[in-house]
Length: 95
Image (cartoon, rainbow, N blue to C red; front, side):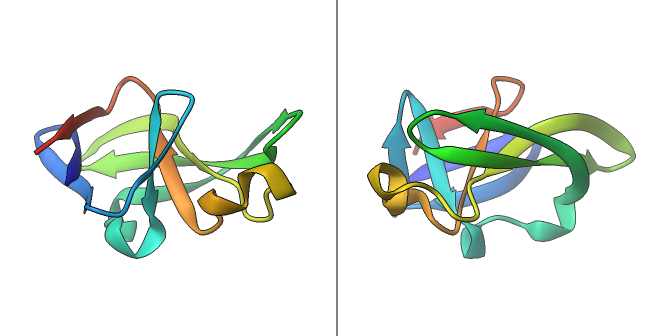
């Protein structure tokens, strides 16, 4: 089981994460979507595809572009469809 915490709040917890490049990708239904905020940022990975970002907002504190998802990943990354990963500002630990 992995837990993602930011600003002393659990924002995701799952025993069904997928690890890619040292990041735990959490199934979207295990992420507290109330803490996610929309972002216009996107980036492109040559083998995963286009990432769409979210900010975090917890108890009045915000962190811009701290989470991302690949809505339609390329074939080599299909296992992370419907998953969200977090940047290093979010504490992700095995629990």
